[in-house]
Length: 157
Image 1 (cartoon, rainbow, N blue to C red):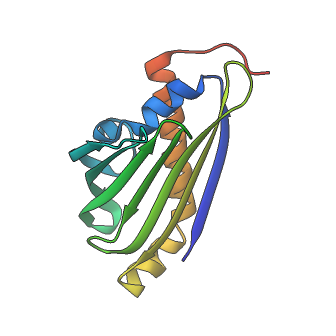
Image 2: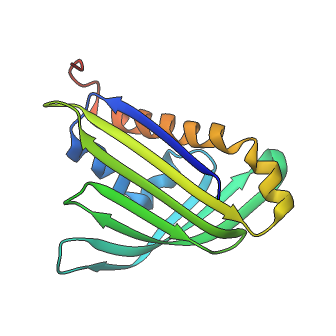
Protein backbone atom coordinates (compact mmCIF):
# COMPACT_ATOMS: atom_id res chain seq x y z
CA UNK A 1 0.00 0.00 0.00
CA UNK A 2 1.31 3.48 -0.80
CA UNK A 3 2.02 5.51 2.33
CA UNK A 4 2.19 9.28 2.60
CA UNK A 5 3.27 11.28 5.62
CA UNK A 6 3.34 15.03 6.22
CA UNK A 7 4.53 16.68 9.44
CA UNK A 8 4.19 20.37 10.27
CA UNK A 9 4.67 22.52 13.34
CA UNK A 10 2.05 25.17 14.10
CA UNK A 11 1.88 27.94 16.73
CA UNK A 12 -1.27 26.59 18.39
CA UNK A 13 -1.86 24.35 21.39
CA UNK A 14 -2.34 20.59 21.13
CA UNK A 15 -5.93 21.00 22.32
CA UNK A 16 -6.74 23.58 19.64
CA UNK A 17 -5.27 21.49 16.83
CA UNK A 18 -6.84 18.27 18.14
CA UNK A 19 -10.24 19.98 18.19
CA UNK A 20 -9.98 20.67 14.44
CA UNK A 21 -8.73 17.14 13.64
CA UNK A 22 -11.56 15.51 15.57
CA UNK A 23 -14.29 17.75 14.10
CA UNK A 24 -14.93 15.38 11.19
CA UNK A 25 -18.51 16.63 10.68
CA UNK A 26 -17.09 19.97 9.52
CA UNK A 27 -14.41 18.62 7.16
CA UNK A 28 -16.60 19.71 4.24
CA UNK A 29 -16.11 23.32 5.32
CA UNK A 30 -12.36 23.34 4.76
CA UNK A 31 -10.81 20.17 3.31
CA UNK A 32 -10.18 20.12 -0.43
CA UNK A 33 -12.15 17.54 -2.42
CA UNK A 34 -14.58 16.92 0.48
CA UNK A 35 -18.03 17.90 -0.78
CA UNK A 36 -20.04 16.50 2.14
CA UNK A 37 -19.24 15.18 5.62
CA UNK A 38 -21.57 13.64 8.17
CA UNK A 39 -21.12 11.76 11.44
CA UNK A 40 -23.42 9.06 12.83
CA UNK A 41 -23.47 6.33 15.50
CA UNK A 42 -21.29 8.32 17.91
CA UNK A 43 -20.27 6.30 20.99
CA UNK A 44 -18.21 7.22 24.03
CA UNK A 45 -16.02 4.39 25.30
CA UNK A 46 -15.17 3.75 28.98
CA UNK A 47 -11.48 4.56 28.35
CA UNK A 48 -12.33 8.10 27.17
CA UNK A 49 -12.08 7.42 23.44
CA UNK A 50 -14.94 8.12 21.09
CA UNK A 51 -15.94 6.17 17.98
CA UNK A 52 -18.28 7.02 15.13
CA UNK A 53 -18.93 6.46 11.46
CA UNK A 54 -18.04 9.31 9.12
CA UNK A 55 -19.57 9.53 5.69
CA UNK A 56 -17.55 11.70 3.32
CA UNK A 57 -18.38 12.53 -0.28
CA UNK A 58 -15.16 13.21 -2.16
CA UNK A 59 -15.24 14.88 -5.58
CA UNK A 60 -12.34 15.36 -7.99
CA UNK A 61 -13.96 17.27 -10.85
CA UNK A 62 -10.96 17.17 -13.21
CA UNK A 63 -11.25 13.38 -13.35
CA UNK A 64 -15.03 13.27 -13.08
CA UNK A 65 -14.82 11.34 -9.82
CA UNK A 66 -17.38 11.64 -7.03
CA UNK A 67 -17.57 8.91 -4.40
CA UNK A 68 -19.17 8.59 -0.99
CA UNK A 69 -17.25 6.53 1.53
CA UNK A 70 -17.95 5.49 5.11
CA UNK A 71 -15.06 5.41 7.56
CA UNK A 72 -14.84 4.07 11.09
CA UNK A 73 -13.23 6.80 13.19
CA UNK A 74 -11.65 6.60 16.64
CA UNK A 75 -10.86 9.82 18.50
CA UNK A 76 -8.43 9.43 21.40
CA UNK A 77 -8.05 12.57 23.54
CA UNK A 78 -5.39 10.92 25.74
CA UNK A 79 -2.99 10.48 22.80
CA UNK A 80 -4.38 13.35 20.68
CA UNK A 81 -4.94 10.93 17.80
CA UNK A 82 -7.74 10.64 15.24
CA UNK A 83 -7.70 7.35 13.32
CA UNK A 84 -9.93 6.66 10.33
CA UNK A 85 -10.30 3.29 8.57
CA UNK A 86 -12.23 2.75 5.37
CA UNK A 87 -12.84 -0.15 2.98
CA UNK A 88 -15.87 1.29 1.24
CA UNK A 89 -16.63 2.53 -2.27
CA UNK A 90 -13.54 2.58 -4.50
CA UNK A 91 -11.28 2.04 -1.48
CA UNK A 92 -9.91 -1.42 -0.85
CA UNK A 93 -8.17 -0.23 2.29
CA UNK A 94 -7.45 3.21 3.73
CA UNK A 95 -5.91 4.22 7.03
CA UNK A 96 -5.61 7.93 7.84
CA UNK A 97 -4.12 9.10 11.13
CA UNK A 98 -3.87 12.60 12.59
CA UNK A 99 -1.40 12.65 15.51
CA UNK A 100 -0.94 15.90 17.43
CA UNK A 101 2.14 16.25 19.65
CA UNK A 102 3.29 19.13 21.85
CA UNK A 103 6.14 21.21 20.42
CA UNK A 104 6.74 23.68 23.20
CA UNK A 105 4.39 25.57 25.52
CA UNK A 106 2.00 26.86 22.86
CA UNK A 107 2.98 25.00 19.69
CA UNK A 108 2.09 21.63 18.22
CA UNK A 109 3.48 19.17 15.73
CA UNK A 110 0.83 17.79 13.38
CA UNK A 111 1.58 14.44 11.79
CA UNK A 112 -0.79 13.25 9.06
CA UNK A 113 -0.26 9.77 7.64
CA UNK A 114 -2.29 8.07 4.91
CA UNK A 115 -1.94 4.45 3.74
CA UNK A 116 -4.29 3.42 0.96
CA UNK A 117 -5.11 0.89 -1.74
CA UNK A 118 -7.91 1.24 -4.26
CA UNK A 119 -10.05 -1.54 -5.71
CA UNK A 120 -9.45 -0.34 -9.27
CA UNK A 121 -5.87 -0.71 -10.51
CA UNK A 122 -6.44 1.95 -13.17
CA UNK A 123 -7.72 4.46 -10.60
CA UNK A 124 -4.82 3.51 -8.29
CA UNK A 125 -2.42 4.26 -11.15
CA UNK A 126 -4.08 7.59 -11.99
CA UNK A 127 -4.15 8.80 -8.38
CA UNK A 128 -0.71 7.50 -7.38
CA UNK A 129 1.01 10.40 -9.09
CA UNK A 130 -1.27 12.95 -7.43
CA UNK A 131 -1.74 11.52 -3.97
CA UNK A 132 1.30 13.15 -2.37
CA UNK A 133 0.07 16.54 -3.62
CA UNK A 134 -3.45 15.79 -2.32
CA UNK A 135 -2.12 14.90 1.15
CA UNK A 136 -0.08 18.12 1.23
CA UNK A 137 -3.14 20.16 0.16
CA UNK A 138 -5.14 18.55 2.97
CA UNK A 139 -2.44 19.49 5.49
CA UNK A 140 -2.31 23.08 4.19
CA UNK A 141 -6.10 23.38 4.43
CA UNK A 142 -5.95 21.96 7.95
CA UNK A 143 -3.34 24.54 8.98
CA UNK A 144 -5.46 27.33 7.47
CA UNK A 145 -8.52 26.09 9.39
CA UNK A 146 -6.63 26.15 12.71
CA UNK A 147 -5.57 29.73 11.99
CA UNK A 148 -9.11 30.70 10.90
CA UNK A 149 -10.72 29.29 14.06
CA UNK A 150 -8.07 30.24 16.63
CA UNK A 151 -6.45 33.26 14.99
CA UNK A 152 -2.82 34.11 14.60
CA UNK A 153 -1.00 32.59 17.55
CA UNK A 154 2.19 33.54 19.33
CA UNK A 155 5.46 33.05 17.48
CA UNK A 156 6.93 29.57 17.64
CA UNK A 157 10.12 28.82 19.48
